[in-house]
Amino acid sequence: MTERPQQYRFHQGDRVLPFAAEEYDARLAGLRELMEVHGVEACVFTSMHNIAYYSGFLYCSFGRPYGLVVTPTQSVTISAGIDAGQPWRRCHGDNITYTDWQRDNYWRAILSVTGEGRVIGCEADHLTLVQQEKLNAFLKPKRGVDISAGTMRQRMMKSAAELEIIRHGAGVADVGGFAIREAVKEGARELDIAMAGRDAMELEIAKRFPDAEYRDTWVWFQSGINTDGAHNPVTSRKLQRGDILSLNTFPMISGYYTALERTMFVKEVDPASLRIWEINVAAHEYGMSLLKPGASCAEVTAKINTFFEEHQVLQYRTFGYGHSFGVLSHYYGREAGLELREDIDTVLEPGMVISMEPMLTIPDGQPGAGGYREHDILFITEDGNEDITKYPYGPGFNVVG
Image 1 (cartoon, rainbow, N blue to C red):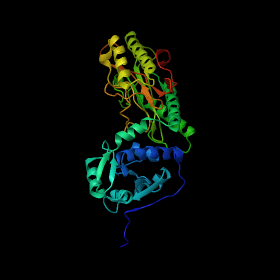
Image 2 (image 1 turned 45 degrees about the vertical axis):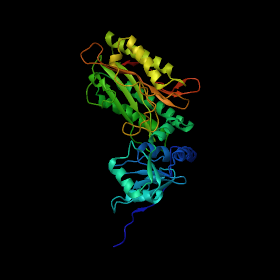
Image 3 (image 1 turned 120 degrees about the horizontal axis):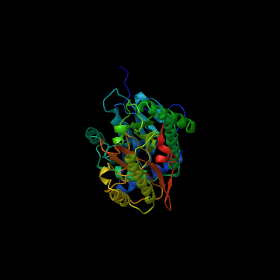
């Protein structure tokens, strides 16, 4: 019987990446500086966000492990045979395909790059217990170093190229928002309105990025009681006159996530709802004015808390006031060090990207019941911020249908 390989290189077609090679080289240079500080000889990345950030390849695991190995001289993605040459076409650096002829060929492929007995950097917030055991068994590391916090801090500071793709994303989110506004009418289902927004965004992404892969763009469009949670899925509920609505568009461009979120009402808004809506809009505007270099996330949060407390609605706040943007989605990635919460002391700096998104949820049965949320994306600049979200917020534009 012919001996079956444990791994091979399947490189075919033209390489297409969201950024120039120089962008990835700069990211890898920053990573290697971090590795040198911590004495790390090889990093083994397993998460979608770090693999995408350092190589451009956004994997689809479908029950299989994927990786990126970075040493002082190499950057190698590790992918499954089922994907053939696509991972190489979509990654910066080398690519090794592992086979499933033998269990754990994934780790043998990683070992072929790292060697045994090295100081290994890994992501403690992503590596499972099973995979950690296999890492130790195959690589026999001298010691392990959790590199996840350092890589998160690197991802929080955006390059000019990243700011450009995020700006495009915000523009695409606006396109989806306007398509949804046009689709809102009494009797329409949440599902149909959400599809209108998603279709408009995917077409717009294809127009702006004709060489990209198109995946993962989505909409959460909620109505009535379904607005109470920020991440409630779409249903087939039909819109009724006077309903509170929550518009949420989420374009995904080469792993980069952006968002637009707006409170809306169908045709009319009652006085109790209008009062809560206007308070939340005022908090949104106040919060955006606070986002500037030198302000800490905790300080911004405390000031908005005080504002809500003065209006006697702080008890209706359900989560923090904003978060970072970059390589992330609703099922991967998180830059938890840049969130507007009481327990985050990170100081804002130029080059960071953050949202302002206050939300109040009034329980069902009370006057003004429902979830109210406005959301803009802001670039932190040298002397303040730039709001890159252009779709209008507030009652003047968003009583529709």
